[in-house]
Structure formats: structure tokens, C-alpha cells
Amino acid sequence: MSRLVVSVLTSLDGYFQGPEGDLGVMPFEDAFNTHNLELLRSAGTLVYGSTWFTENWDFWSEVAADPSADAREHDIARFVTTLPSIVISDSMAAEPDAPWARSTRIIPRASAPAELARLKEEGGGGGDLVMFGSATTWNPLLERGLVDELIVLVGAALLGTGNKLYAGPRTGLRLADARILPGSELVRIRYLTTG
Image (cartoon, rainbow, N blue to C red):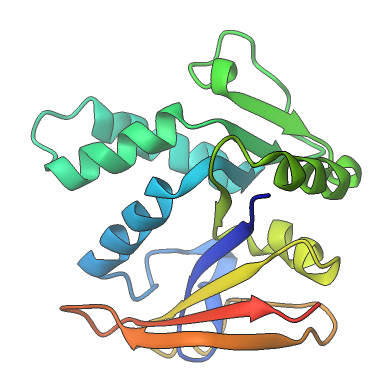
């Protein structure tokens, strides 16, 4: 049995993106990538929404080809570009010649809950199912009780506007732990679902 683990960075006032999806205003710090690499090491499958998948794949593919990138970034790039991935989308089409085609499946939103439940039951490809960001994709999964762990990285910034972390009905969570990521002002709050 595997778990679905969601990790997301937010501002102190609960926004995971700035206005019009702007990520440039987010309180990113170096410790963010160290945290992500730790999660990638426990992953058997990555889960995405279509927008975040495309942006993430393109960015880390460039890092993989960049000889000046450091070892941590090359490790992240290797995981992102080689781990099996699922993209939950009703609009994205499979591209047989795309560099990600061999390791990525696209499933419609209506099929996602059953498919993720099946993958969790079967062991998630040898590790956790891990999802970063993509709040419009993971919010409905949390509502349906499919998210096992929610990690919120709270950064030292107030945005005042943007896209909220969560927009669904009340959902119970249980605090597992909270700590400041070493060498940063990011507070990692780890919740387990109570459903």
C-alpha cells in the first residue's frame, strides 16, 4: 500500500500562486529544493495537473542538460524526468513523440480517483505517489479522502491576493509535525488526513 503525499508552498496568508498564476512572487528559498528532493527519493510515481506538469518537465529537462547545475539540481532533474508520472487532465493530449511519453500517462479527471486508489493499493510503483503544487488538481482528491499526507511549506511573505491553497469544503486534518527547514525561513507543517 502506498500513500498520496501532496506538498505545496504557500505564503503566510495561504496563497500558492500570485495573481494570474504568478509564481515569481512566492517566497522560494534554497531549502525548498532540498525538501523536494527528499520527497522525490521516496516517490514511486509523480502526480500532476497539466499546467504544472508541462512547466516542471520543461524546467527540469533544461537543468538535466546544463553541466553548470549542481548535484542536487541534477538529482531532482533525474527524478522528474525518469519517474513514472500521471497527469490528471481533460485538456492535455498524449504526444507519442514527446520526450516524456514513455514515462507519463494522461488520465481524465473523472477517472483519477479510481486510478489513484488502484495505484495506492498496488504500491504506487514502489514508493509514494507524490504531488507538488497543482491545487486545483489535489483539492478534489483531498475532498474524496485520497490524500494521505499534506505538507504545507509556509514562506515568510504576505501576498494579499492570488490563488488560495484550498477552495473546497471543510476537511479535517491531524498535525503530524512542524519545523523550520534548516537554513531558511520556511516552516514545514505536515498533516495527516483524518478521513
